[in-house]
Length: 303
Picture 1 (spheres, rainbow, N blue to C red):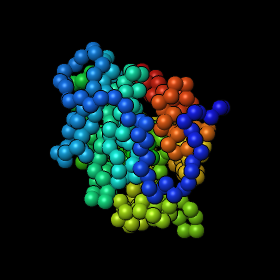
Picture 2: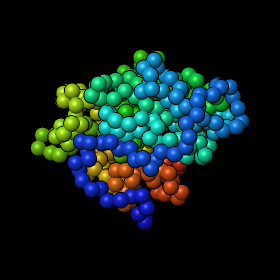
Picture 3: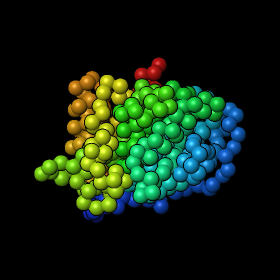
C-alpha cells in the first residue's frame, strides 16, 4: 500500500506531552448561528448548540446531511485534554456531512482548570444530548457512533467501555452503535520497567489533567473496562504513530476477542499521529476507506 500524502514522519516523541493535536489546516468553513430544529431535506449546519450550561466549552456544532434516518457521528477532537475546541475540526463535520452522515463536533472543559473526569462528563452529556435530539433533526437515534482523535479517541472509547459515565444519563455502552478511535491511547497506566503512554504523560505535563495520580490514570484506561457490552470498535493507528499505540491497540483487541466482542485494528501505512486524522479528509485514503467500510458494516448489521 502506498503512503498517503498527509502521513509524514513523526518528528519526536516529545509531542506526547504537549499534545495539542489540532492542525489549523483542519479548520474550514464559516461560522453560522444555530438554526431551527425542524426536520428538513436540505443539508444545514447548527453552530454553538449547548449540551450543558457551561458556555462555549459545553457546546457542539451539528452538521446535518439533509435526509431522513441518517447515522450520526459524535466526534471529539484531540488536544491532550488541555487545549483546543470543536472549531479546530470543522472540516471533519463538513466531510462526513457531504458523505451523508450527521456529525456532532463537541467541545469539552479543559485542564488545568478542569481536571479529569470533567472531560468525560462532558463527552457523556454531549452524547446523551445527541441521542435525545437527533430524531427531531431527521437522524436515527439508534445509530449514534462515537469517534475521536488521540485524547478525543480516548474519551470516546472510555465512554463506550466504562458504563459509569453514561449511567448518569440513564444510558449505557449498549446505546453506542459503534466506536472509531484514531490514534487512541487505550492504556494510561504507567508500566514498571517499560515505556508506555502513561510513562510519557508522567514525564511531562500530560499527566496533570489526571492530577498525576496513577490510580486515576489506571481507571481512565479503556483497556481496564473491556466487557461484553463494548460496541463494535475500530482502532486506527499510524505506522509512524507514537510507538506504544499499535501494541496497546492489539492488546485491547485481544482482550475484547476473549469476550467475543468485535474490535478491528488497522495500521495506516506511512502515517504519523496527525497524519491519521488528516487522512480522513482525503479522497481514496486508506484511513477514510477503512472508516467508511466500518460504518457501512454497522449499517448492514442493523438491517
